[in-house]
Image (cartoon, rainbow, N blue to C red; front, top):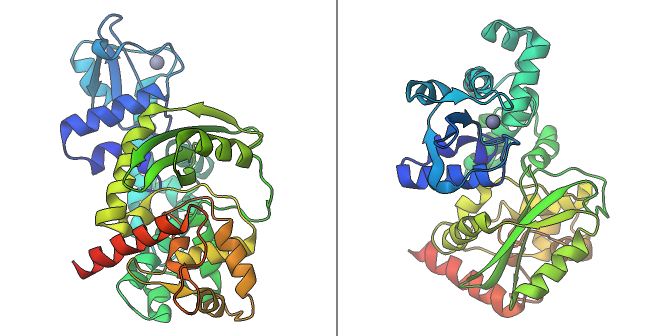
Length: 362
Ligand SMILES: [Zn+2]
């Protein structure tokens, strides 16, 4: 699945956890969380999580895996969000996604997806996009990029990994990897125009952590000594966005802090929404290929990008990284092994590297 929110029910076997996440999705009217419906005992109506109607009190809500189960329990579908139609779409989208998962080594046409679902190619694409938030072609590119990361993290040679991941030619890797990062090139000074950004901060073992996300994914992760400073930094970066506090991100912060300590590779699976120049994108993607517990010098990163002279440009791209931990700029050090700078404090950089080295030694 391309975005963590889409598969909350399938990836979380523990029921209490699932419904806690489902409730969080209802609270933020998350349209992408479509695999369940919620019913309101006071009205007898059931809705999907993105329903625009007034949100019910938690005590009056029951969750069901799908519309049929809610109906069987005596609830009727909401006329505003039409949860039964959406569930039907979710089934179609899932069928297409499963098919695409099995066809990684070739481009699947919309005509094929149309035949698979008994819809027109246009409708098939529309349904896929509405449910999963990206086109079938983007979905395939993301799946390949993710497979590439997995192959590379197993230590295969780059060429083998590229082919194993289903890329025909390695020249396509960079652009597609950019897609997987949720990055769109060419917007150097993006202020968040027309975008709602939800954020929250919470204390972690690395100090106060701020996580901010758009509908598409995480757009900022920052570390600091206190909340107000982090909020100020976020506002400065996204001057034109509508910023909203969202306490439900508390769980995400806790999960990230825990992953950072116990399984840093898991941080690569979180959906990102970062804006960058093409060069920044290439640098950040290459940082994500440095295994946890290892470091590279700025010069090594530049050389890996095919431009050994671009040391200062690489350092600048590291310094402009908006997503601490998820884009591990802390793994880049001076050529003498000195920690040099870190946007969120050199002491913090040392602490993260220590944790990762310890985790690697087991
Ligand atoms: Zn509704």
